[in-house]
Image (cartoon, rainbow, N blue to C red):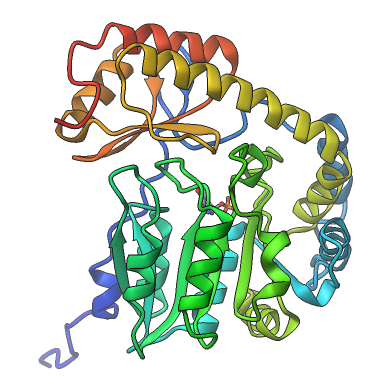
Length: 367
Ligand SMILES: Cc1ncc(COP(=O)(O)O)c(C=O)c1O
């Protein structure tokens, strides 16, 4: 009997098929452990109490976790002097952003963000079925907020702002943010991604919590992955008016923040002072590295996160190869044709980086 079954295979939505893959920082594979400066992680591990808390919670992993993440949500809210209804927790801030876009943007809607910025923005926008509108950064690698305001149309539903901007480093100032919010209709949701806020030292930089109450259409996005050294545990959150937070909560994948993750984040928040001291040490190293590089002829935009940006343009992949060929290999994050993002590591790692960059014969700025 002839086989009359249909042979075509299931196909994804066109927008999903066209997605660029998210490129994680290189992990290295050689026998000699590499210097891993590719993922903007903390150079220090979690403090002891955090591991103990996560381990203790592991005793109950045969049970589902608290779906509402009640304790950690309340603790985050208390740390910011807000109500728990104004906080939603997810499996990393990237997951919270995915839920947010699911809640607020769909086919036919536009999501505006600066470019180059965090590479998850275009991916999550496409996954939500919405259209990405990329507004180029200025020559100083900063957000061009007047241009972003001018890009708002009737179809705009969400604007992403990243301060400090990953991967380039500069912050958005309070004055810039206020001017922008005044120019954008309140029906547009503005999301200020503050993943690296603990490393900011620029005097004029916007602080999300300080401006939140002035704007009914503003949300903040924060994470335990960077200064709180919990990238592997996956906890992030959004903060803002309860009415804007509730629809995001409705989209959170049930039970996606595990019990150990909730307990670990709770312990990390309790050790806040220790983590802020560590962040200060990273800032001191960042200033040392950026100053040394500038003195050595490199163009380094204002660096306010736990990373520096080397905008070497067409020389990007060659520079990455040069760093990778050192012993041990130095792993960084390339953006082909644009530049190299280098995470600030421990002092000895930063010394190794500076020594290797010192022997680079190519351009130290985009040519
Ligand atoms: C700007 C920015 N936002 C959000 C995140 C996501 O962090 P996580 O999902 O680990 O909370 C990152 C991570 O690199 C980032 O750079």
